[in-house]
Image (tube, rainbow, N blue to C red; front, side):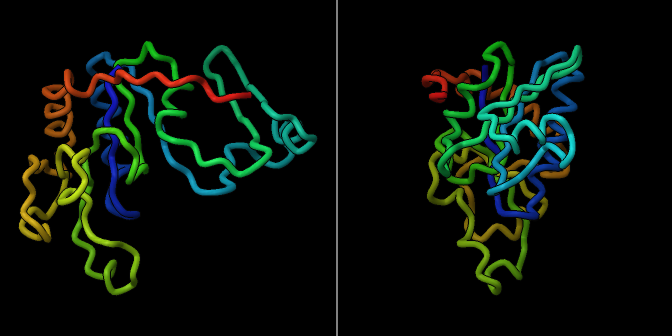
Length: 187
């Protein structure tokens, strides 16, 4: 499997780009998984549903399965920050691509999604772009290349042209092959 991250600050367009790239990959017959970083107590379940009731009763894991999908929810007894590699180890290794969204400082190759957002510095929400100092940023996807604060040494991709991003990914496929397969999380 090949792995690429999409990193950037909130509101930069990561989800929109990942969604478009997934659709384009599927059109080509590629099998794609997505790993998305979520914050704190997110929930994919709703109060009152059977799986929610099982979790609330104290189940460590609840696995939902139908003839169309599978979902596994695992409750950690203590807060636990998972690495990108922990999550990759949980995926089906037979996928062609894994797109990782939201692990800005994760140690996987990544595309930085960058938009000019003047209010970001004023509000103290960011510390600037990643690409000047993070060797894992292999390309920058932006809608404003002229506004990049530092000239990138990496290729600059058009954020509004997901087909261009996909073409670049396919050309880089060999260097994006995932070699590290850590142990599955302890249960």
